[in-house]
Image (cartoon, rainbow, N blue to C red):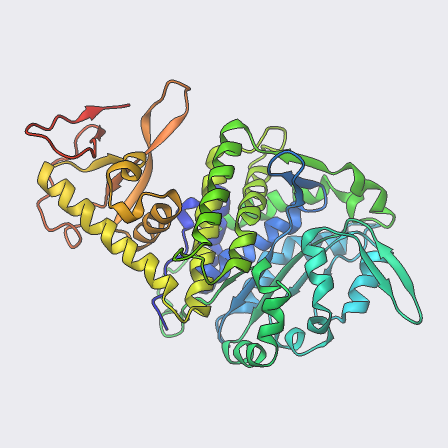
Length: 457
């Protein structure tokens, strides 16, 4: 099994990041397991009332699917119980709402609940082996329709009905042996139908053998408490969406749009992904998965945007870039788990090439900063596309080799740009680190006889 890259926790908003850290510290569960559970909770909290528009006319739900492959004893149930507690409390204590969280249920029963109660629901299962072995996976087409937000028609000998504009978040956790056995039986079918392409999949390293208890091991629970408060407030604002007859309200969902800069960035991301689906591209062997990446980026950007109380404004470029880096991480996990030809290894090799370039560059010039965009023009030739460069940067950030941070100065449009700083780590950089200089943005143009760093932009 190839190395597992760390989840890019630093790319999440503070409230979300602190919630994950609080739960992880309390449970000692793998970070990506906790993060996937928390992100599925965010999806469920906003999917009923919001949609996202990527570009003109391309509108989709914000609901997302997560699939975590984790061993027995990795505290899947514990994490799910903690993360989903505010939802269960809402179901239990709020009068007049329908049940909207389901597990261990047949496809027909699930669709019937969506039809008879509310149009927004979640399939949450921390032992998903029974789902992969059950009838639910035999009716895989309807799960895809739920992700797409399309109407679902049910025609059985006893009952026929149609569910208009449903919304469904899915969070499945399954043990590795059970998952791989299911893949041997039905993996080709799940892939061909596009189910796996719609899921954000990961297999974290187990924390077993490292979950020690220490004296005075009290953890700060404020991150989790703030998360619960936020979830309760979001649900309270959407009570009517979880009540019988809510199908009328579905037509009044608010559509969140990308702002001007985020829209340009999304188009660029989409085109880069499309390019990498071509011959010799990173996603050459994964076109079905890559084809959903840009949409998942927009969905996650909308979720993070709404969760930060910004629903009245268009989605910012910063939110979109955060979502991009997280989806790129899930894509690298997908390739790590399903690759036979080394596509994931290509990302690792790109990261090594970039690290070597940066170390050499900074050592020769005794500088420690460079503009990210300059790497696209003057960095390693094979990394002069934003998708491959971003994947390499994300990998190095996860390893702690470099850090990515906004420059203190803004450009003419008043928007902050990003600068890359190499990590101040003597184990990584083989040259002495001088006292930090004041935000030097070094040009990466090929060196001339004299090299003069420029400040700002």
